[in-house]
Length: 249
Ligand code: G3P
Ligand code: MG
Image (cartoon, rainbow, N blue to C red):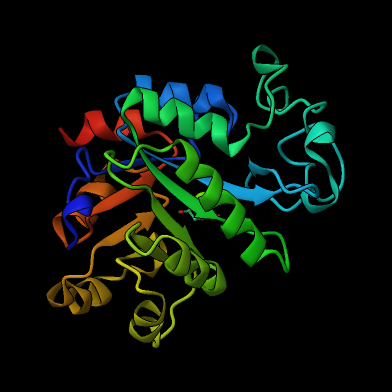
């Protein structure tokens, strides 16, 4: 395992920030995750129509903002007029969709570790990865442990490998595929980031001797987290990192 990646301590990654306590992928959710004791935070990166990397999970605006339509069709200025918090609770009204750079500066200043999931809108893998990594490199200190760049999108990982080969990459899978070793080799991935439902006891047993750093999403149940961590999983993504950190102490 790479030196920079055996540091999943605590082995809980805040999924989209403290997603059960605050609107996901907002600065408030990231601050809450840090207050909860998370060291690693995962977030989802997409590109606006005018090329600004922003943090939002869905391709469309409806679920997590008061806007409508596709992220890929909206400019940064348009996105900034939207409320990204009121859907979660009235006290969060006025939250904005953050720019990637805002999160990166926060993580840098707070000494946090970042897992940037490149989640490109359709057809935008190359552009999203290039712009995101260029923006991150401008503000992330070379002396700091690098971000983990992950994606379901193989092209995104390949572009990340060209641009910043020394930054570790994680291959995300939400469905099992038997050629994962080959794909990891193609893009030089360090971690295998799996939907936790794919981790049957048999698979855990088969994966263990391979010593691949395994990350599992999304685990909110303490017993399941303990089981996975005791059976070869290096870290789990949780919507409530604070609760799991306390539970597994
Ligand atoms: O990176 C782990 C996890 O976030 C991947 O799935 O849909 O929650 O982004 P999703
Ligand atoms: Mg994600």
